[in-house]
Image (cartoon, rainbow, N blue to C red; front, side):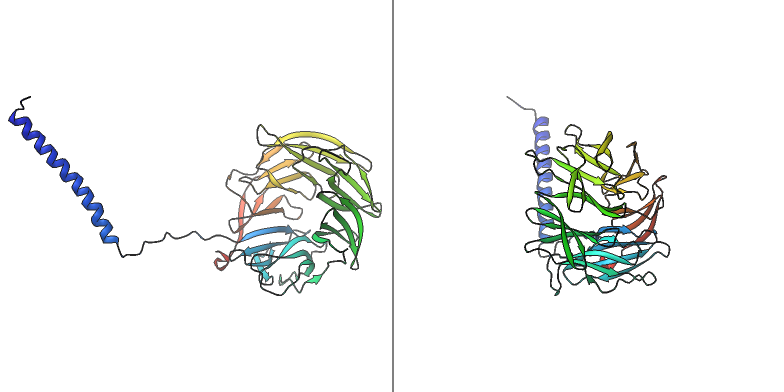
Length: 377
């Protein structure tokens, strides 16, 4: 087919232009690569990571907070004590490569109960176990630790301990089976055994006696059921029916209530069931669906509310109605830990290296303190 001179000229110019553009693009990339050869590639600046906070607890009067902080790529740890009114914090380092995990304040607010355990790259000469450390309320210093680990039978490994109302210690151990001991003057008395594991347990004083309420597996069950037991003088009485498919359970500090949570497979949320605990039987009060985000449960001192933290949001669940309410509007908390502050209607929350005080009703958050930068990785 014959082409006109004009068409031939147009095609030629178009091909020349296309070749120029393609060639220029190739040459540009090649020349840019050549210019960069031999030069170091810049590394994007990394965002510092805050210390990890665990075991956040308020003293009974709400004046002091204590927690375990872990930093330097999980190789260092220590006990922090914070004065809520003076906005002051003080660190007592743990031995290098060890952590002292804060379990509880003593009732007088002048000592902490901690468990000492290894973290990666332990180098200091220390011994794992249960310890009590005094706290000077003026200087906030925590003193030399005192071993509270009782003499346990061969093969037992201590997991945790809590103060009982009479000054004794409730000890939970790990082996097969798991055991609960009551310890006094360095000696441990076996209270109860579980084939698999213990859930929440509480030591309370009733009629002048120390009574233990514990959730554990039903020894005769073939289906993995658990139940709430009342333990007195090493004798356990089952208070609830066999409970199936329990994700977690919590007993209130006074042992008045029990919350049992089961996962809703369809929604991914949890169904909470509230029980009122009696001496011979626990009575079911109500069930309610609660957002899965309401995790890490903390009872308020008056047991009228439960705080759900450690998710993206903060929640309160009213007792006994199980009414769920989000605290404030913030949706990116992802808190390390939280606790109620004394008997006030406020909570302490640690998130992203910052300690906050949050009003449980209004959601107003006030920054109390931030980890110094030398503790950020």
